[in-house]
Amino acid sequence: MDKAIDDAQQTPEGRARIALAITIGQWPAWGGKGEAPVAKPDPTDVEALQNSMYQSIVRLIPMKGTGGTTMLELAAPGQLKSNLGVDYRESYQNGVKLYKNAVEALYQSSPVSLTDDLAAINAFERISADPEAIKWWSAQGELILVSLKCPCCA
Image (cartoon, rainbow, N blue to C red):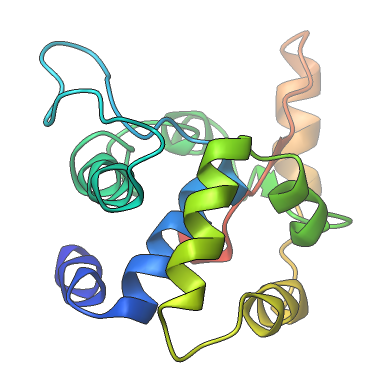
């Protein structure tokens, strides 16, 4: 996955899509445990903010097998995540305003359409939680359902 993200960072459309993923997922664009990979950018500097978003994806956001809900899914049988009913356009609209400003500027500088990409993301096949995983967590006294924010993280 690192190569795909690194390759995306090399193109205008890739940089726009990285910023879109961070915005839809409502993930932080900098910071984290310990020393941040880059200093907090000026959130009005589109290029600096996007570079920080890229750094966050490759260095701060847990990838499959390294954290997040993976440890929960490994503790119980089956898929715990679900994105049934998630509207990614709405997730984008609820994103940080300065992030959305950067996304829109990056898309204007790229050969792809934000509207088309949001439609494509919303058209991805949906993933449902495994009833056995829900049952297992319910038996533990807690029901934990996590909505996917990005189809590529499934």
